[in-house]
Image 1 (cartoon, one colour):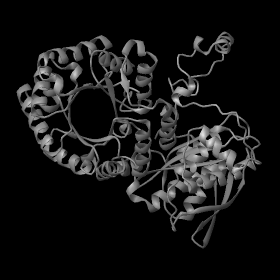
Image 2 (spheres, rainbow, N blue to C red; image 1 turned 120 degrees about the horizontal axis):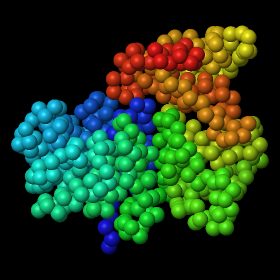
Image 3 (cartoon, one colour; image 1 turned 120 degrees about the vertical axis):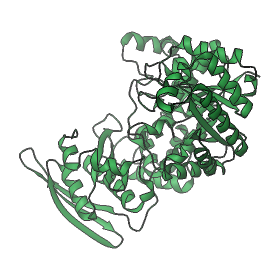
Image 4 (cartoon, helix red, strand yellow; image 1 turned 90 degrees about the vertical axis):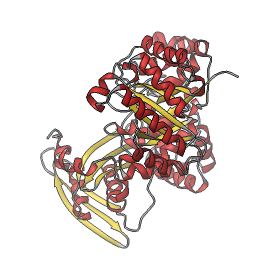
Length: 534
């Protein structure tokens, strides 16, 4: 049997730490479920001791995930390890991932430790963790700038203490592929007990080399790749999972390695991340970007029509990009709709499919042709919706008066239970005025952190997809709305976020969100007027 590369996905830990990518527990659970469908081997669910919210999300993911190993990061401290163990102990396959910096730079200026003190701390932490859990990973933070002799000493001692995985991070993205290859070869060649552990790599992308470095390390013998969907993460991000696995798949002649990733799920996984976080995938993003399989040059188009291999080294279908020929419209029945879902690789339970079909019929009355991207957006709208609450505000109607020589006025009517509430407000634009009217109705002040509108398809009758982030004193909340009317979509997105804010206080996004909400960002007036830099 060929060697297998394990994929350790840290989208929900390192990736989520990147600005703009924070997720609440419900969103993390959805993402974890998709990562399990993708076939990752290990999900790093979070940093349990970082906050009560992180602890709870790690715990909930541990209970929900059945096939993957679930890991929690923890410093080489007993209190961290205890918190991580408490969070993951309910998992079918738990892992404790502890770490300590080993480079002289970090030891001197950050930890203020000698090499011997750090070695002792690492051994104690691994041994303590191994007494709690059979699967323990130890990371040598800043390994790529660690003395090679000392690195081998630490790795050998950590394995003797019980580590089953040894991670060698390029923490600041400083190394070149040749240096990573040499580092991995040095550890594998010199550490006498290395056969008792899996060698792992965690490469950052500060110089744009994260994927190249990871593949170089794999070529040298590393058998675990730590990565994120779309390469998200702190600073310039991490190695992108989809690029690593398609590198292994496309260049099988160079690597000849097995993996458990179902590459046909890559596009769907990346799309879900974008929908949840509201951060759009760059069109030029390799593998999952909108232009990854687009050809505008006449020479390229001619070549692709003659033989796709002339300019495509992988097929769109291999990463889950499918083109279905069945046209849907307002006369289409549920059987045809179900077939299109199947063509797109989307599986829903009967109740959810019925709700999506109902939304499809509403949309079909407004659009002549329904694009597959419209269907995906509708699925996300229904599947990603929070559970209805009796205290939720819902939109009944709105009337807008606007023009280029006047302030816009919005009159909005919302329902809450059996009561209706109507308020009017003005602003420099119709969306601004609408959000102000919503704020007056709910009688709860909030700031607007982020506001994005994008078309789902290219045509004039396209659905508008609106994502907002709002904040109050308790935290940051994300909302999403879709409509062929961008004003309606904006109100729906705002209400989605407002309902979360008023009813789901445990779902605040991000650590320290409450203080950021009050002091870092402008309010709705600033953002919608274009002044966000205060």
